[in-house]
Length: 289
Length: 154
Image (tube, rainbow over the protein chains, first blue to last red):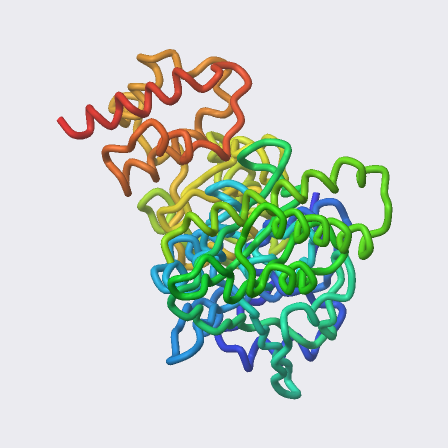
């Protein structure tokens, strides 16, 4: 049973910030509710008020400017996976969104919720990392733009203050010639939380068998999201041949262990994250740029 | 708080505590017990209803969220005398055994056929991936949806 609380559905961002500013840590933002309602039920979250942000038009839109794609925090995974704009300029994100939960969960759960819940296993985070996404954080006092990685403090912890809310996530449109892939491993194919995931976008040098630019991020294997910068620099400028791939895979799994520490699962995770990385590279290279 | 919404094509106005889920509102206040509670945490799909035409887990939807929205439950699908083609097909193909998962699967199947009247087997499997059925092994359910899609066409 869920204990009582108040519920407000502001229709503007200004109003949402005002209500949140008034209630501070006693309030909780709700969008899809796919994580929060479970916490309410378990008694892990005990807000005095829920502030529903899904009626704020600017949080519900996917927009494009000359250089950027902006996604409102209350856009659902279902809307992202079928968005023409996102499929064109950041397909890796649309692919990842299509893996979240079930159809029913994707129709409720939102990208902003996936980020602020800060689960290391969140499917949309590694794709947003390789898209170099930035979050727009707003409060009564103003607006700040925060690179995605800096939003996270630890597993299930963000750097948002109690009076702040995530309003929008934006990323630069991937230039033409880029291709990408998202792969995940879970206990079952559908309806299971990712144990590990890898997102890659890359561009080959024109007319050459050589990687011109590459960005890699692995999900669920580190406490907070990281770009795999060392592995990227091994691959950048080189052909994706066996020797280079092996070096990059070992570097990536080495970084994972470095950031997460040696755990009982490490003996399993090292070869598996390497295999996922290779699978993701293969799929990205097969993709039509 | 008072909320107003469209339930199975009828305007409803109801007083509900803000901390109730849509599932609880349907079952305990509105007397619509066709929608079942299974896991209560969005895993099993048993409580699936359509919100603005798309399937959602009603156990994860807070009741105030449906203010001004359109909700469809299994009670709106067909009547005893005039079954929805999906309901008839589920009976004909033995897709109902204990029946607990059936209302939810019917609603996801309806949403699928509304959007895509002639789905492939893979599309049907995708559409019901968020539902657990421990009796049928899913084969009869998939068959029933396939056959229903044919009868809708005719």
